[in-house]
Image (cartoon, rainbow, N blue to C red):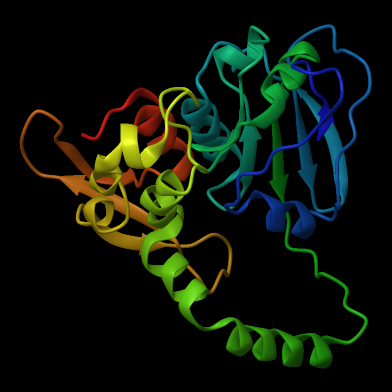
Length: 251
């Protein structure tokens, strides 16, 4: 969260993954930044301790390379939220990235980090998470997992958000022709970039930290002009809409 450079008002974004839980295991609920650093820095949160470290060597790297470099230094079990060159240059559409491409992309918050010269936040730790009633918490978790099971739960588990592209196009909730069109008239081909036509390339499921839905998918296209090696992440609703229905692309 932060003051959005796009609107000047409240801005928030989320990306899932593993960073949030690791922040808690590092002993923190949140990190609050005020002011601007004189040089590039990253924040290390390590078992209850917070320290700003020099990020000069990381400045200019993309988000994936930054994450890999920091994990090589602090261990594979750390989690990293960082920016790439777009955030460094305070692009108003830049994102904060974790887990090799999970992007907190709304409101230009990557630019907020860049403006403060914060390259990354690194979380490491194994501190216990205090609970007022551990037994009751486990009981409620089991209850709600069971209660949530059903059509919506199953659809999200099978498709993720790509399962809603066609349906939302037909009811006017997905942008068609940059919001100038109507799905049933201008983009009846929406099924081609939705649900089963997306996951036919899926080779493995994955989940955010301890999520019972596991809506993520790793993709592979073995041959052809759009071949991609195993491990590419499945496109989700926002991507399919932005690169699909928004510009009438059904491929």
